[in-house]
Image 1 (cartoon, rainbow, N blue to C red):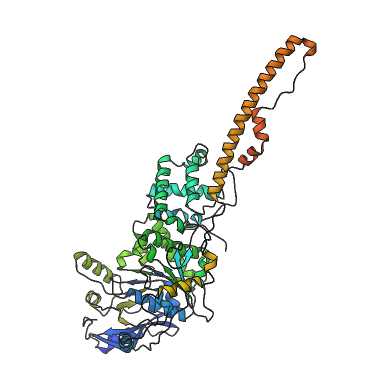
Image 2: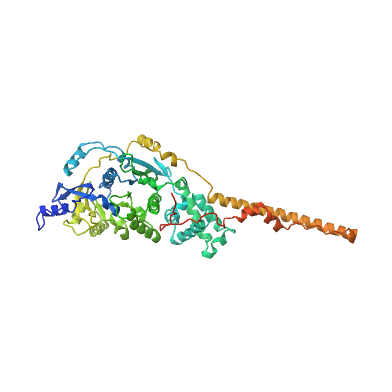
Amino acid sequence: MSDSTPESTPSGGAGPAAEIAAGYAFDGPALELGALLWGGSCLPEHRIRIPLAMLNRHGLVAGATGTGKTKTLQLIAEQLSAQGVPVFLADIKGDVSGVSAPGAPNDRIAARAAEVGQEWRPAGCPAEFYALGGVGSGIPVRASVTSFGPVLLSKVLQLNQTQEQSLGLVFHYADAKGLELVDLKDLRAVVAFLVSDRGKAELKGIGGLSTVTAGVILRALTAFEQEGAAEFFGEPEFDTGELLRTAPDGRGLVSVLELPAVQDRPQLFSTFLMWLLADLFHDLPEVGDVDRPKLVFFFDEAHLLFDGASKAFLQSIVQTVRLIRSKGVGIFFVTQTPKDVPGDVLAQLGNRVQHALRAFTPDDAKALRATVRTFPVSAYDLEEVLTGLGTGEAVVTVLSEKGAPTPVAATRLGAPRSLMGPVDPAALDRAVKGSPSYARYAEAVDRESAYEKISAEQAAAEAAALAAAQAAEAEKQAARAGKEAARAGKRAGPAARSTPEEPPSVVEQVVRSGIFTSLARSVGTQLGREISRSIFGTARRRR
């Protein structure tokens, strides 16, 4: 860091540093971030920490590219694991897998540890590796379309508000009829049915689904599938309870979602991360304030979640972030500037680690001033400090054990004990396939769902139509035979006449048939228990 911190204040040079450090002297368990920077010097005797009990109050890790955000995540994650708290990390660039392996000592690590007064020893964390749909190295993570819900799906399909509302009607119909939408072909089948001659009446009472809107949704689904997205939807669906596990030795499991293979689909993976959070929110009980979180979830590249988000989507995010704290889950959003996060969400983030910002352009300067305004009043000139921070340094403020913001502290961060970089691909592959969870999720299953039911109903309808045509033809032939018999009776005289038994009508024949019985249990009837949904539009499930 440059000499941008003040040498002294009216109360004296040592006084402010000691006052800042006193704000981080917690009684309970805490995570060590590093040492205070003051007057251009690193003061290892003044420790900057985060109370463990406050990590469910959410947080923000921000800073320009290359300023050390990933290493900060690693530093926090490995200490949480050591305290028995499970962690979720999204590995977008492929450089977080090293959290599972002991770090490699070198001169730079030794120098950093000496500067901040850190007793550095190499240590890896127990880790599990996942991949969306099995694309890349990891245990496959899939979600059913029903569980994903219309709000999140509209986000990844990039539908407008009207189209999102129409997709919501499609889900409403499927939910009410107990039609599970397991994969994308199920959704396509239901959309197509609801604009068909047989299905149009099903939504008539609640506005209906226009052919034009259905066409847009179907085209979006087709394009989505052509991008390879079909692999991410289906069964077996990932049980988010897997993220809450601890290792046999009591350490928290670090779940790493490997995303390098899908990093070119940011809308998809960022929305999937939100689904994981929403699903956890549904299943976890209320616990209130706890001594340690049940899970800390790091949401990397958070700006992708909010780009192009609809009003309903943003409202759902705000509500989830606000309420999931009481279920023992902490969320850290990771991005470049606080401006990337909407104000209503930013207001929920009590713990802040702000790495360096650059002010090369007028827009950069504006973002810098906006960032400074999000911090409490401090003893630093924050505009100057934030542009002068070096790699692995940050401005920190967290919530104290009483829930009050701590003084703003420029901090030189400690070095992670785990490997700062990716593990060997062969080792990663062995870890994935050696996991007990791999066999559970490895193979996709395509069971009977909406597509098969609607296809069966279509086949039954076609069979019924064929039977009706055949019955009509038989009725015509019977009528001709009856007329012939009548004429013959007239010729034979009254005594020879008899009243032939009238053949059943075509309606009676179809109603009595097994085909009609099957058709009576059509898509328009109740096929199962209605599916209920959460505040985020995702389906509620019983484990």
